[in-house]
Image 1: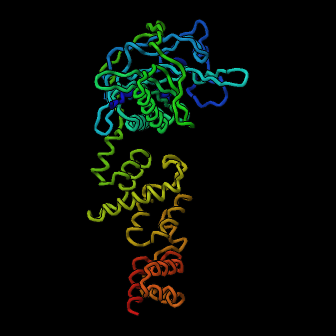
Image 2: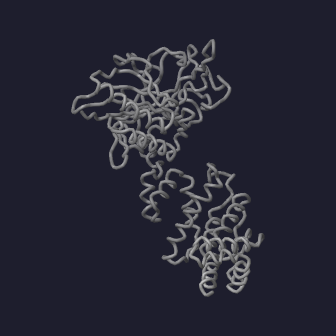
Image 3: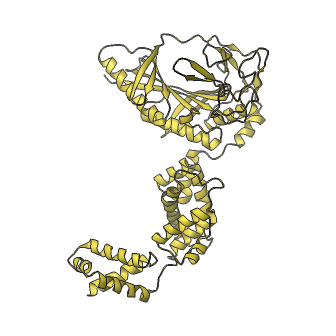
Length: 480
């Protein structure tokens, strides 16, 4: 029998706002010192009242609009009641009945994954377990937490990972959250069941998935585990399981026979929210070009290959820098020459420049190469004024100092040698010193030709025009 996975995701994202969800405390979940960003509101002291963070509401609605959600005119907050040490009030302010956003979708490889809702709530504190006690840090308590819930439309571990990765990218484009999974700023939980035909299977929840790789591996393992259980004639138990990234397995944490009764009721200390059409349209106007739209445009405008597009879309800053570089290329370039320059710029940005950056960004004061200087650098290569070897040296100096490439070339004497007579003289000198390589070439050893080119380039410190070197060397060797 074949079993079909039905997978739904619950994704929590900590929003990047200046203050917490219901108080004026600093929103800084990475504060190293415990219980620094706290106040009577986020630690639930008697007699205090929460106040809604408008920016958190705006960012949640912005996300919902980007995910094709409906934004109801009316929404409100509810109390979710449960007791746990990291929840100071004994309840969490969340949204159950009337969320900010509902009924959206995110398209993955041509398939629409439906989004049931996107709602807003507050994060909990953090437990620190010591040998003989557990400590509570409330710095994170009350941070705006956006929760996205999908329908069980995902059918594979790979598709689940792609959904999470695409959502993460959208968070960056919208500038609503850094969504760093390692820091817990984006947390993914999975609900998965296997069905045979129309009959729905038993749902199992997977927690502790703190990377995209863990999402894919955890779901993959759980599909295999549930398949083995069903094929052995046993029943899958409804439970919550945790992911052990080291062992690569899910482990049972607790059985979940029925839905927990959180005794939801409307939050009495917060007013309901009404969103005017003007308010929604204003937020909609703030939504930038999104990743999928950018992919289509980069293909159309620059005729880039798929891999290059992926780099420029996933590395948003580098993609924007690429477009600025292209806009700085000389305006009178012939149309047939422009594709070569675009390809050249793409290659140097993706390989050489990213190698120098070592994971850093082109955004910020530390990055010194202006788009104008990078465009000039690309033009110098295309015009044959510097070789690829010299280009690496020039780019490295530009990266370190921010200097103009022409200035670097002139100051360091890196102008490419194109004089044929001068190059021929050097070629003859190298040939006279490497007679064995010459004889090997005449015996048919192609590698000897490359060796001789390497020797010529070394003698000229990379400044000889490689194409002219190749032509002269081949002419002399075949003539003799």
